[in-house]
Length: 192
Image (cartoon, rainbow, N blue to C red):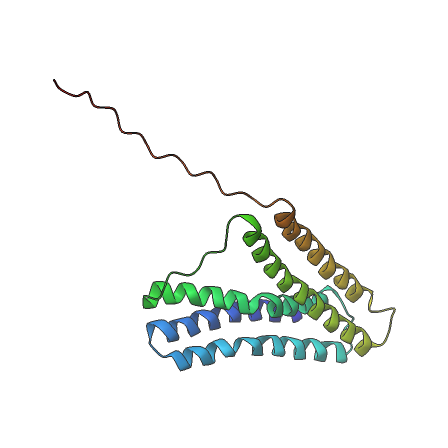
């Protein structure tokens, strides 16, 4: 049931996002669009409640509950950035808004950009860890909660790997290609 709900929440996220952006830009109903976009966090609240009820009803903590915690953590860490990015593109394509700013491609500006994205992953790992610890305390049986501890490790391994990748942009910043010289015009012979 928890896995099905995770899939429903993911599909619901994209459906609400598409509906919110369509209402905002195609139907010219910005308040309705904003209301639909603000409903997205409710999906994670429903997932959290259903997961807690599942554990309360005696379900053995398993990978499903760990995956739910990671999903919620990812959404908290990266959901707002994703919605903002898509909103900018929708405003540009559907409402004639300004072209979205593209992320920097070179140098320390790119390193800072990658660092900000990594902070979202770090927030996601913290949220997932807190939820998993709360689930462990909620269950109260250390013998049954080993799978949840394993998911904590997965959250932090992901954050460390992403952090190393983000740091690599600062250690070896990519340089912009040299500007190509303008093509020369062929020399013309002067007529006597």
